[in-house]
Length: 165
Image (cartoon, rainbow, N blue to C red):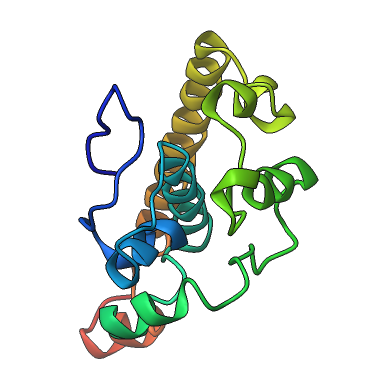
């Protein structure tokens, strides 16, 4: 969100891309007395996590002005697919709480099981290397198979027409 004033810690300005905007940020446009704090960034984090999981943010098929109207009025978005872990679903539900006063602060969110139980950097590197190695092997296998079967399906007929034995 917009830079917060360190002495006050709240804003009432309206800046940003609508699909990721927290309801309280949108409310500042409708009500000059409305405020928000850095927990609005956690809403945006939740929308970003949804986007990463589902390849698009909620309401992205709508005009931005329509999204601005609906975000504060609709229920919080949720993951559509059940393929994600319960911890990830819980994380999304934790950060996408409409009333920002009920949303956790960053320090609290860092204790959430989804965050706390993430693999170490070393574990991620090992997993990525293994994944890359598997992809390379599949590509090599496919290229080998494509080369092996690259001839015409009518190879014998083609040879006979050409006068080959």
